[in-house]
Image (tube, rainbow, N blue to C red):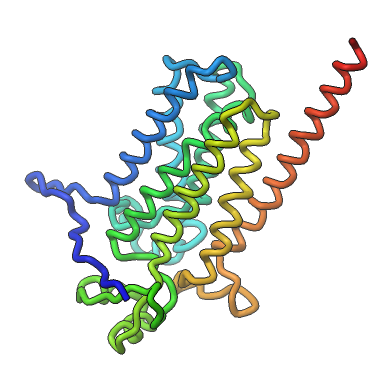
Length: 285
């Protein structure tokens, strides 16, 4: 069983201002998205020009940060934030919701599409393959912060935690397990590997060729939804929420189910509409 490494969540202290690894990971994710997007923007079928890319990344970044934070507050911790409203600003401590960030990005893409006379799904298809690297970076930030652990385990896939400051932040049941010699599944790393690396490879390879509008967006929703749903079986639910039903259903899984269904619908409609269009063109000829 591996041992959780000693990592200071603060990368560097510049006077009174600490630079946290968690925040840096979001910046790295955005830079990777910009770099990947630059190559995609040069394709003849791209709805975004290289000159518009910086504007697009700014819109997406704003959607991620604002949507992710508000989503976490609404979905996972509303009562606690009511008691201490100023903690909403403490983003370096973690507390970002993917589902909230996704909603924020979708709103940002709708605004960008309207501004540049593009369709909504043209923009979501373009940006979908750029998102997974940011997800991987964010999960690495969770790992460095020592948060979002999985279930206790004695298997070789677990990770022993010895740092007192990390143990102190764990829920009571996980603290007891760790102090009794149990390891924890590093579910943050599982998510980084599946929702980040694996999903990126799938989307990047799939979108190398022109696809029917909506198809890339649909595949993203299906891929993320399936991977997140699976990892939730080893990831501990938020202590204040617990399991919502059946002794295993988590809030993450509940929010993911509509994503999978919408993804299937989008892909079906994309190819169905494409088939109808091709048929109409053939009839016209």
